Length: 282
Image (cartoon, rainbow, N blue to C red; front, top):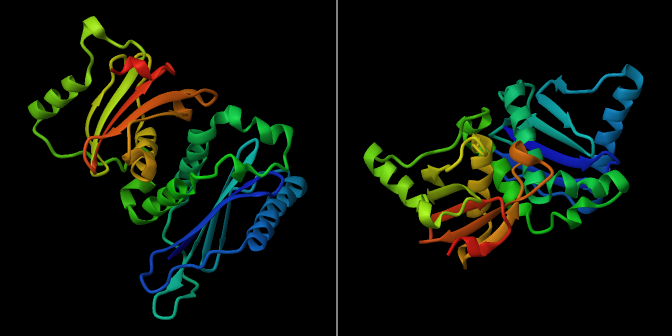
């Protein structure tokens, strides 16, 4: 099985493309800039043609050995293309790919949330003003995180379904409660702007603290994005970091602020706040 994901602007400018193969014998080759631009333009042209001639949005295509799913927003177009491949000679065959449409749509939704995670919807205003703008300039340095998200989806079956895929460290309930209480601030010196605290170990959740669930309750997809982000951004492991992030399920137009520190090489403390000042976490 080979999976090809493409993100481009509605003007046909390439934003992101990554191919993942489930075969161990061959890794798909990366395309050059001209090929990526040509493919993105052709993809957007196909979607525009269907919209103009049929007055409908193209959501899915199936052919022999190929299954394509599309997702469009105001400024961006997302596509996932699954192909069946014979392992013996790494050539395409006519078998229908096994990924369900809903699973592919979930991948495209995750990719959309990943771009908003970095830019927020406000950051996409540049495409609304200049449809031909190269969005890769604003996403520079985040390619590794987006590639990892795609590869995780392709290799982790539970992640293909919405509200699934987050792993928890196995602990006795009383021990998890102890860790959760340790994440909570003392009421006398509380930081009311802290909306969520996470302790992670080996890309799994140890404990979650949500002081005010009426204000903020973290979703599974947001957890996936956060875990993928902290473990695939090498600079975060070197020092304490204070960084803006956008959880679009909470507020697509604004940022939260994440305090990230690795206590060991694979244990991470992450605190989310609605305020920008890092001094709130002494």
